[in-house]
Image (cartoon, rainbow, N blue to C red; front, top):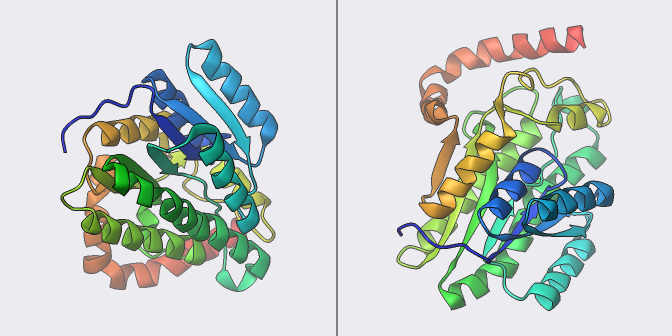
Length: 269
């Protein structure tokens, strides 16, 4: 598939109240798409929508609690009634947590599975069929390099991102020969509020890489490039494409060093 024209198309972005989601909304609105902003924090969504409108774009805040299936269903129905078809779906919303898995509450784990997994599947299946009927559309799942390299401290989070990789790859292959694409962005550390949110979770710890990552704007730019030139997977930053080979080659070493890093982090927190 070559570069495509997304002018005036509808883009649904989850987790749009901050970080990658907000940066992606600004970028896509700047490029002429009409953006639907989804997150729990209404005040943040309304402020972002107003910012985008002041810059000449089109944005619509749609508050929803994505941990709740009934809320996700309500959101989809509202979108279909008000806007019709979704042309671009950016599954960006995600919850994180850092620490020993034995100290993670079931409530935290359940909400992470609901947002990082259930939400992606429900929204994807809801809109993908109509994309296929139109033979046009793009779904972008914001994943993580942790999906390729199991790491201490993020057992459940990393597992949800591994699921995302598998889910994306399978759908990408199913859609071969069509003008519909499903992609995954395997991002490394990104400077957002993600680490602060993880720390606020019950028994949550400090995410050690949160201050050394790329900017949210960098990820947003890569998402825009994906819409122009579709492919199955991109790494942000690009050098992270070597990471899956690191696990295959040096997994035995990570088995020994990883627990020491987590133990030191736990002692220092």
